[in-house]
Image (tube, rainbow, N blue to C red; front, side, top):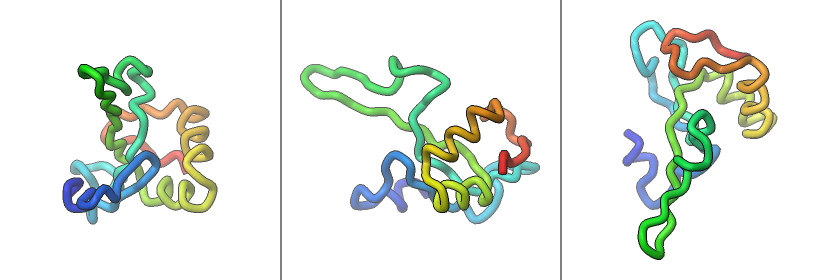
Length: 98
């Protein structure tokens, strides 16, 4: 699914994509946010391979309400809400922060 959305280089930092259903049973998260891997720090974000630099992003499962907040108020506003709420990204059945 991600490859389909990314065809032609359409996905990048801050983009979202709908999944059409929760990413796992019992989850409210039915979208992915293309995000920096914040919990793992900048050492994971950039890899130096010879003279090339590769940026790693991750797909963070989010709810439609969280996606709507990002669209309305911007990526920084959503990420600030995640930080304030102490987002437990590993919990598949987490509640929406919105």
